Length: 530
Ligand code: G4P
Image 1 (cartoon, helix red, strand yellow):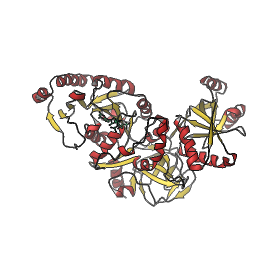
Image 2 (cartoon, rainbow, N blue to C red; image 1 turned 90 degrees about the vertical axis):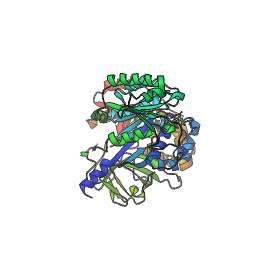
Image 3 (tube, helix red, strand yellow; image 1 turned 180 degrees about the horizontal axis):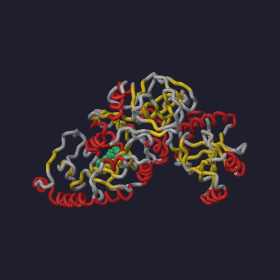
Image 4 (cartoon, rainbow, N blue to C red; image 1 turned 45 degrees about the horizontal axis):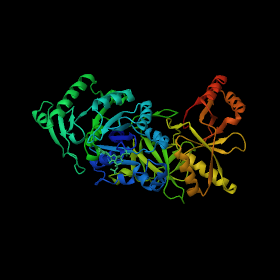
């Protein structure tokens, strides 16, 4: 394939994820985006798979739905001349670690806010990850068909939480039962709101001009108020600056109502017009450009497949460069082993052939039996290790033992696999005879692991409280210094799934003491796979 053709494929790609607090309307908006792009024909297809997110008793539903969720965890749509990849993120906050890793595979994020609730805790956490990576963010303020907060208040709330300028592209006229529509500030025209799920792109009534007497006549006081606000923000807010958006310093803001298909097309158009195509990515050895001829990719998520009897898993690979082709020979850098994935998992997509080849920004799903681990880099032969896939130090710990000692081997095997999948972190104490420790970011992870150990590995595990509340991975320039530290603190040292040493403790005070006493040791709250 010529370089020009490759470059063209790369520049057509837009890869993004939606970040939101549960119930803000992520599922609804996802569905509407697919509908508007023509990737699905009827509403309801995405909604059907919506896994339970609220009560912890519902998580077994997540298991049941796993089959469906593999297919819909990446949704590809063609819109205008672009190929858009929408990556799904787990809704429940206890699985936020998974979400962080998904966010390493996107080039932009769409933030959905419930206009009644404003910015909510889960959104803030996800925003921090985007901010740390300078991911460009597009903001959609949803549910204007309800009585919600004032748009000016929402805007300043966004600015204060994001620490970036919010630039409204549209402005709501009225709200709730008096929601008249939005005024498109950049095109200087009003889009009149009509409730209903049946409307499609191009159906909207448009009225031109902020000074148009027809708008004033039809929308009265709501329009007067909106006009004042538009004039106010036009003076106060900076103009949209594409560079500032790409650098994560400005976010374009849209108002709408996803359930009524209102405001959805503007978001799609903005993704195509302004969101970036895939950029370069840093590996330990060098920086890799997306339009390099050779294929490279990184595993950012592992999902156990629906058939527990086979224990096969799907590795989600983010293509970082070149062209992937079904059946090509690829090398796993960590092990040096070759593989030839023929049977690539299908994701939701309009066109079959899009699944047979993939370019930077696309996601491919490779079924395997444990050959691929989180963070693995795949190449056509080069030894390369991408960086940037985070593992966070757990804040919750439980010791785990098997009820039937004869099943100890199965327990270790099951935990090793679940650990590799990133479902939980497994720590093996340095001290001989200590029970394995499980580390999690959310409580629900323990329950899921206990359930999966039972159903997939036939192990009845007993979870026991642990006194630890913190872990820090430890490294040092001088291996002798590290050894000395570990010997002196052997009772607190454990190894994770890739044999990285961690220091387990019960309080911040204990960490401070260790930091003072051992200045040559570095204590890490986050580990990147290496
Ligand atoms: P999530 O994935 O972010 O958790 O949210 P989801 O799309 O499931 O939406 C959460 C609830 O908000 C749903 O109602 C959905 O219908 C509603 N919703 C989404 N967009 C809008 C909107 O623009 N206006 C209004 N008024 N509501 C909206 P639900 O009652 O929880 O579910 P359902 O019974 O409608 O399925």
